[in-house]
Image (cartoon, rainbow, N blue to C red; front, side, top):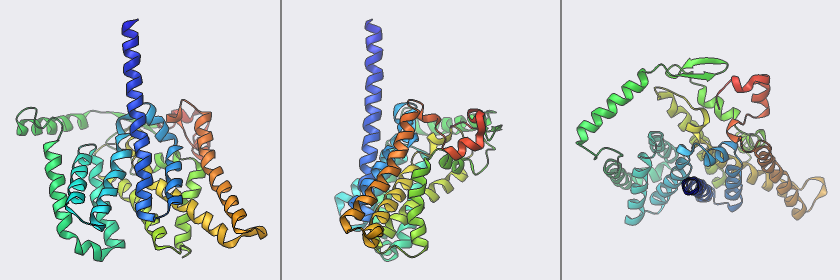
Length: 343
């Protein structure tokens, strides 16, 4: 009984820690959306969207190896933005330290560097030119922290450890490991480029995808009136695009959506921007002869229902959110969708 109680305490502690990580990820997603879009409504909607994504719920409960990216990625981006917008020694040091820690969390985090540079180059090119010196300092601090805190590097002679890492990578990639993808067993080194894109689209509730599409359409039609709203849409779109594009250089792929949890931060930014735009549009147009307050309530009912629908889907399949496929993906997979793709 003592052994059982000890194991239960350990499992409970692990679940509690994973829950804290995921909850912190929600908080930093909110702060990032606020920093970029300057709309508390958009930030709150982004956080709510993240909270009801099946992949986030699933991996915060089990197989949580990548849940840390939900925290460290938005936190790193947030600190980088603040350090560039209002530079100061403390802000630059903190941004560099957290970026260095992020680089040790997952190799995927390297993509944050071109993502941040691309956002600055497109949206704030003058700021990018002005802050080159500060960015070099932040990068230098990050590189030093990444090397000093590199797991296993300092356990023995560093060069020997690096040689072992190289040998391990070469050995692992030489294994004929197979992954089920689109009803076929495929070598993990020969998985098609659309593997991450498919998993992202298949594992997202349609209601959230609809809200994410709203600001993109509004942008293309020139209907976004606030520059900050455009910033939020651009950041979300670049976040998704750069992280998925970065995966193209990966020598192997497996495990489905777990490896792409960080991409959901960008999608949450788009959902927040979409819900915020839809509410503002209804308040401005006041359909059916409604006054502003009634139009606002209609908007919250509509947007809230779309987000709540995603939550309801998670409740329906509890505790198997990791096996979630949206209705379109399930229909394509048919009755044997569990044998069609590993989610």
